[in-house]
Image (cartoon, rainbow, N blue to C red):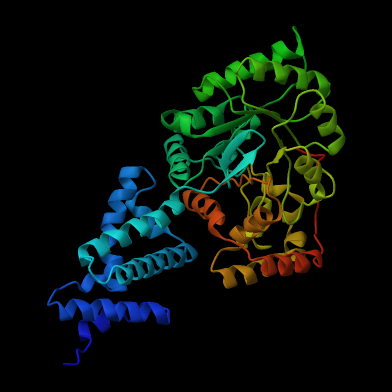
Length: 446
C-alpha cells in the first residue's frame, strides 16, 4: 500500500525550508515510522526541533552555557546557524541509521541527533578564543567604561552588574576597565568596583584588564608607585592579581622604567601581562626591548585606521595582541546615529568625537550605508559587520566594544558569529578604501 504523508506532518514542516536531501530524509523517517506503526512524528525536522529544544535548554543550563531565554535573543544569523546544526545533525543521524541497516531504534536516533545538536549549541555560548600574547580571551571582549563614564547618565549599579554577567553568559571572558573610569572622571575606582562585584563569582573563568594613570611621584620609585596603584585596583576588583595591566597614557614617565616595573610585577605573580594604550610604534619598541608586551590598546575602527600602517604589523611580528577601543566609533558605525541625534549634555564623549559632529555624521554616511548593505546580506547589524571586518583582517585583534545597554552588549558580542567569506571581505575592504572619512581623532588625544 502506498503510504501518504499526513496533513498534520505537512502543516508542521511547511515553515521550514529544507534542503532537498534533508526533505527526503524527513519523509523516509516519517514513512518508516508509519510502516512500523509507531508515532514518531517528532523525528521530522520541525517536530525534532521542538522535541529537543527543551532538552537542549536543560542541558545548556546544566553545563552553564547560557540561559533558556537566550534562545529567544538569538540574532537571525544565529537562528539560521542553529537550524543548520539541526539539519546537519539529522543528516548525520540518518546516514548512521542507514549504515546500521535501519536496526537502530528510533529513540536512539533521536538521542544521537540531540547529542550532535548540542555540540552546535555549545558554540553559541562558548565564544571562539584568541591569544593576546600569553592570555587566552574571547574573540570579542567587553569594554565596561560606559557603566561609569562617557555616555551620559549611568545606569544603576545593579543593572550594570547584571549587564556584565549577561555578557559573561553570552561567552565573553575578557573585561576591560580602568582606575579613572568614574562619573565625569571626577573620582577613582567607580568602574573597577562594579566589575569586581560582577565577576567575583566567576573570577577564575575570566581575564580582567585594568589601567593606571601616572601623574607624578610624590615619593618612591616608579615600581613602588605602580605597585601602589595596582594594589588599590586589586582591592576594588576583589582579586589577588590582574591579568592585563596597562599604562593608560604615557605622560612624562620613562617607558623603559614602566616596562621594568611591569616586569617585576609579572615575576611576583601580581599581573599576568602588561600593555600600553594610545601609543605609536616607537614607544612600543622601546618598551618591548625591556619587558615583552602582552597587548596594545589603541583607538581603531573603520574610521580610525592609523594603527594599520606600522603598529598592528609590529604587534603581529612580536606576538603582541592588539585591543581596539571604540571599534564602532562611539556608535557611528551602528547606523543608529543621524545628524539629528542629540547626545546627553553631561559626561558624553560623543559631543567631542570628531566623526560625530553633525556635518561629519552626514559626510560619513557612505561608510554607514556600506555597512548596512553587508548587514542585510549577512542578516546581521552594521555594528556586527564593522567588528567582523577587523576580526577577519587581523588574527591578533580583540575588539572591546562598550555600551551601557544590555541588548547592545549582546549584539556586539554576537559579532563573533558573523563570518565574512574571503571574497566578501575583499569587496568590503575595497569599497571602504574608496570612502573618505570625515573627522579624525588619532593617537594624540584621550
